[in-house]
Amino acid sequence: MSDLDLALLRTFVAIVDTGGVTSAGRAVGRTQSAVTHQIGRLEAQLGRPVFGPDRRRITLTADGEILLEYARAMLRLSEEARARFAVPGVAGRVTLGTPDLYAAYLLPEVLGRFSRAYPEIEIQLHCRRSVYLHAELMRDKLDIAILTEQPDLHRGEAVRTEPLSWVAGRGGRPETDDPIPLAVLPAGSVYRQRALEALGAAGRRWTIRSVSDTIAGLQAAVFARLAVSVFPHCAMSGGMRRLGEEDGMPRLPNIDLVLVRRPTGISDAAEHLAHYISRELRNAAAFRPVRDI
Image (cartoon, rainbow, N blue to C red):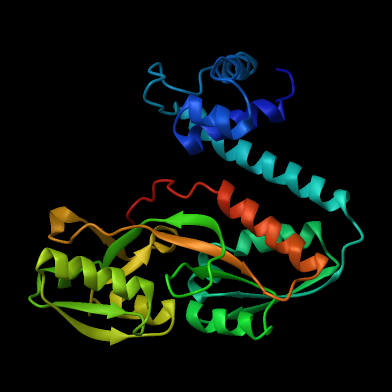
C-alpha cells in the first residue's frame, strides 16, 4: 500500500465533521465531484471502503472508524509541524482567560499542541466565570479570553457551538421530583438562564438545590444525586446520565463560545495563540456523538 495522502485524509475528515460531500467540498475548497474522486482514491489506497454504500446518509464502516482516529492524529501532527517552522522566532508571554469548564474539557490538547509548536511563548492561564474575565479584558488584565457569548458583553469572534444537555447522576432520579432540584451556576450565567427559561416554557416547577462557581461543584451535586444540572456536550463524563424529552426534560438551545481580544491591542505572541485556538476549536468535531457512560 502506498503512503496515505494528507489531502485525501483532510477531505475524509471534512466529510465526517460536516456530514456531507457538498459541505465537505466547501470546507476544503473542492467541488463535489472532486471530493467524491478523492474518497475513491483513498479507498483504493486502503483496499477497503471507509463509508457505507448510501452516500446520501454518511455512515462510517468499521474500517472508516479506525481510519478516522489515525487521520485526525496525522493532520494534527502535520499542522503542528507546519506551525512550528512557519514563524520559529515568535516569543513572549500571553495571559489567557477561560472558564474552568473550557480549561478542563476543551483546551488541554489545544494548548499542549500550541506549546510544542511555539516553545518560546509562555501561557498564563486565568480561570474565572465569563463575566469576570470580560471585565478583566476591558481593564487590560488579560490578552485574550474564551467566553460564553452573552448579549450584554462585547461581542467576540465565534469559535465554537456547543449543545447543552440536562444531566443527572446514575443511581438516582431527581428529574422525577416536583419541583425539580437544580444545581446551577450563580445568577447571570447563560447556562443557568437557559435552563430556567426552558423549564418555565415547559411549565416545570423547579427549586435551586446547589449553586457553584465551578464545574467541580456542579459535578459534586450531580454525582451525589442531589440535583439535575446543565452541562455542555464537551463536559459529559462518566457517572452522568443524559436526560432528554423522554425523561420529561425540555429541549435546550445551543450555546456559543467566542474569543475576545484586549481592546487596546495584543502582541504577536498573543495573536498567534488567538489564531491557533480559533482554528483548532472551529475544526474540532463539535457534535461528535458522546456515549452515555
